[in-house]
Length: 471
Image (spheres, rainbow, N blue to C red):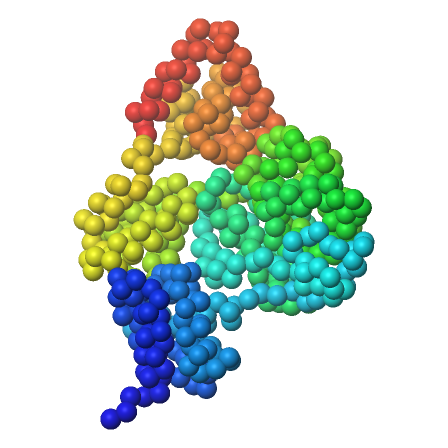
């Protein structure tokens, strides 16, 4: 009895692939695959998990593509059926079906030569790569109190880019909290709703390199500025890297002005709020504050549970509640650590054929996650300071100017800045409803008193020791 056509095609592909990759790799990454169907030139294969699919895409897609084209022709397409727990399956096209593209635009650089790496030179109609990763979309950006404002602003921008109250949108927060994910999700949603708009995502260091290239090549700075002024939606990641680079700042200042004046959308990300950035010109900082500044905070325990559930489901695995709770308690730093831990668990379980039990999770986590004590919270600092001075938490949040209350409030702000990664603006809002300038003044005052007043220094040292116990 003859085998179905789709099985024949896949078996022929496997024979070609088996000849060019090591046997152990072939057993691990190709034996578990099942051919499901062949419709026209589209082959559907089933893979155990989305992690498995991503690994194939990253390491073996060229081998699979060449083999499939040889079997079914130049229009061959590959689709994945991801097997998820409890029979819930979903189909994903291969990477060549997921490109995001901008329309071609007219651009005639001087001497018919363009120095920008996002443009293909030598032609008047050029293509600008948006540099957006389809993985970073709103569907898999988990909402929580830590990011609700920024996410809502991003969705609002996507509905009406350039003509809204959030231009620019300035997203800031520590590493691994989702700044790149959210900013790219905004760009992807805009491309979905407004395909005609030219969207560009670029890292600050890439922008800096392009600027230096333009300056060092004769008459190319005008081309550089002209190129960026054509963009409808500019997403600039890690803008804090412009610090102490006056030439780059000047170029971006002119680009910013042109885009803003013509109702083009700007989305900026940074590891600090505009008020905390150093090495940047005041005229640029003032423009960063024209729209909305939205902070991304570390996810709460509940949000970490949601993230773990969503990402494990995407990878085709089902984690028990005890494993989820253990991971959410151990990994408190950022979302990137959560993703890395999940990928390590899945890879280990795939290679060793072990179930992801609590014992396995504890063993791997101890090797990957640092065994440091959790960071003290602002809430804990406020409670310990109030207890030490014998005042109520309501009084420290009040507007009273009594000396003992002001002193306690300033110490709480100082310790908040010293012992946490929280921004000045967030510290002020949580301790007395003050602005960042008040927090900065409080920190400087406390630092001066520590150097000059022995009694005051003892207050601060005592509280720090109590906070070590309270962690």
